[in-house]
Structure formats: structure tokens, C-alpha cells
Image (cartoon, rainbow, N blue to C red; front, side, top):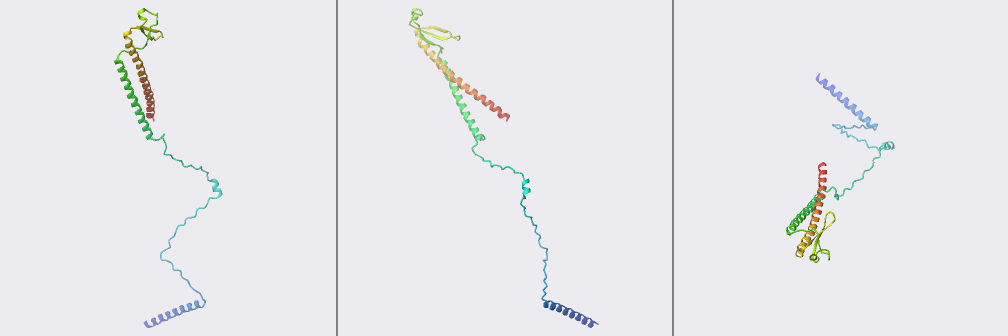
Length: 207
């Protein structure tokens, strides 16, 4: 029984082999070729494709608003108005000027005090007595004159021995007027500067 089965299997194998050989021979005779595509074991990588940018059509261009072109600003390093160093330099210069005025004012005060300490100060002038205008002993002398507040002329005789002293006192008065003028000028400049600084200080506090 076993031998018969083996014989049948051998016969079937031979028949299948002969059929395959017949198929190959008929394909060769008809010049037919068979192609087989070998697929990879792993699926190919799928690459994402980006659609190309399409240019704007005439219709789309007309809908695009025309925006103005901005000019590039030119920045300059020379900006005195916004330079903090300039403001500091000006304040330091003002401080130096004010310090100089203060020293001058103190010097003027000291000179005025010294002038009062030197002797009398007389507001007026000396003139000789007009001939025949007074007593005989006064005709050869001098008189001290000055203007009153109402504009009237005031005068009194000046003895010859006092002429030198009165002349020095009159000179002191003219010197005093010069010192008082300098003092008033410096005080006026300091007052104006103080008022301007007070206004500026108030503006800085409000900012």
C-alpha cells in the first residue's frame, strides 16, 4: 500500500514538472517575457509636496491697497536739545558765574564799609564865594553847595582850614556812588537769574 502511494506521488510530480516545462517552451516560442516587480518590504516614504505660489492675477492686484512707502529716518548724533551733558555743562557754567557775582558783591560790601570808616562823606560841591556877594571875610573863601530834594540850591560857607577835609569827603561820596551802582547792578542780575531759576524749577516739578 505504501509503495503504491509513493508511486502515485512520483507520477504526479513528474506530470507537474512536464507541464511547467511545456509552459516555458511555449512562452519561449512565442517570444513572450514575464516581468516581476519586486516590492520593498517597507512602504516607500511619502513626501509632502508644497504647491507653488501662484502670482497675483490682475483682479487680485487691483484689490490690494496701495500703501505709502516709509522713508528711513536719518539719525544724527548732534542733538543739543536732548543732550544731558549739555544741560549739566550749562548748569555748572551758571554756578560758576553766580559764584563770581557773589564774590564781587562781598568785595563791594567790604569796600563800602571801609569807605564809611575812613571819615565823613559829603554830598555836594565846593565853589568860591562870588565877589561882593557876602561879608568881606567870606569873599576870599569857599562855600559848600548841594541841591535839596525840592531842587532848591543849598549852600553854607566853608572855612579855608576845612576845604581839604570837605574835598576828601566829597570825593568819598563820588566813590560811594560808584560802589553803590556796582552793588545795585549785581543785585539786579542775581534777582533776575533767581526769578528765572524759580520758574524753571517750578516747571521741572510739574513735569
